[in-house]
Image 1 (tube, helix red, strand yellow):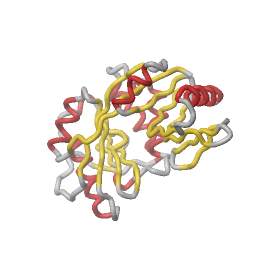
Image 2: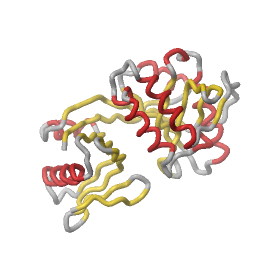
Image 3: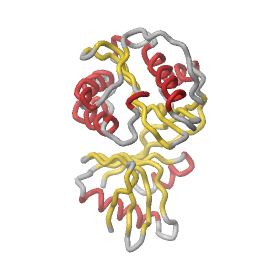
Length: 248
């Protein structure tokens, strides 16, 4: 059995035949998986055992899956732990007129160290995954260096190298883009920087992405500030997922 890349972050798990398909960011010692589909002729226990075995070979010690709420109990009964509930908010991108509060730039791979430091500072007091500097850099590098990254629709506020806020956008499909990361330095919050960056992203998406029908943002269900900001911008909640985590 083996994990094989299908490109665009998709992975397939095979055991004589394909038994699972998922999208994943595998950055040892952690793997973040989503959109898991598995062949129900193979038992859930078999799929998870084989997935754990292959991830362990790759140096992964912890992996995280996002599942629909009605699936959460099944994963809990198989040794997973529940982390938090995520909500997706989406809207059709439309062009808006908004003056930037600070200079805006389109982040590229050259800005990965600066963005990583900014992300680390933004989450330093949360004690979450991104509060670790090395983890933050891995996340930023996987986004900005990825084939799905949309540099023209991604924006950072500030005069380089003094960036204070960033909105990183990636392509999900020809009809959907998503804000993969949105973070602001604590000293610059509540100034409208994130709103300006999302509005600027929509302006570019409307102009350059033919057929794009939806821009989405995932947020922890408990993040009322984020949800209020997005709802004020015309986003509406349309999906919920539960983050489950397990050791390999």
